[in-house]
Length: 441
Image (cartoon, rainbow, N blue to C red; front, side):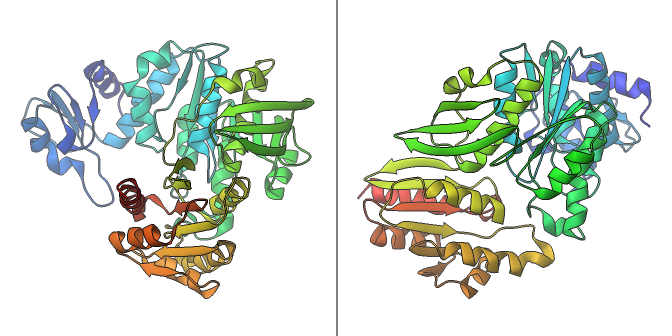
């Protein structure tokens, strides 16, 4: 354990100061923390951080410099300092959210709805790791300490990640959205990934649970829980999506939650985002918001990289670059069928972090792509090429300009073009290049 004195010193030094973990981004007055990563050890860059203006450095290596404070474990220091802030908070409820897809969306909707009840803290952006989450708590401690509700996003890329975050936050209401194939390559077996996600319910303070009712495994788990549980999904759930459609730039949602409900949502929401809304809606009901639906038409999703729909010269363009999995493809395709189009064209890049499942994943993706009228495979990562076993691509290329030019020649008014890949594939460069071509045409 990190000593109490080290934690207190860290909290004093970081009060109203920015915490930096990348020496290249240090500004005058920042506190730099040297963290040992898989590829780079931040403790190697203490001198660079000091030269860049760091007021204090916390490192697990001793130094003669008086501005360097040595601790046993800098990563543990972050966790213990964040734990101390949480201990001082007066949160009425702590909500933990995890799942293979939709965590950040659910967090944003949940925090919006809970803010109707009282001041609500939410973890920033997608800071959902054992480093990112503590940093979010520490840098926004004033907001946290003055809030009534806390909404925390938990991510995982390896076994044990979620449990460490659960032990830090100790949520009393836990949400498991879904368990798909995202990051499956980081686990020995899909069941190990399932158990990892289910570990969110190991919180010592757990009193309420919300789970995705479309997965029979989660239904069975929910039935065995000894706390209050709610399900969201399509059928036989506490929140059930009956139907949805698009009216201009708005989404019309028909759902069943304590009776038939209708909502007009600002913007184009994907089927997956509507499922996330179901989870957030149930959280709000659990916390005592009597009729969450009356607040929904004032909310707008804050994302530009997740099923973002724009129209240009009669062409519907959908960009979805935040993440990719078979499940998110399936969800997106349900939504695409609800949008008006003469033809639908896919520009697909690889689904990453699939490990031994890589080839099988992309072969399955090929089956989904068969429903598109034309498909371009952007093969900067070669794994996507396996999709060709189940469909005939119109173009396979790793060249941004070649793909953009093909789209310019082949896409016509009335068409819908869907761009999707994992973030690291950087498919957005193709999207931006194509946009530039048609804007200047």
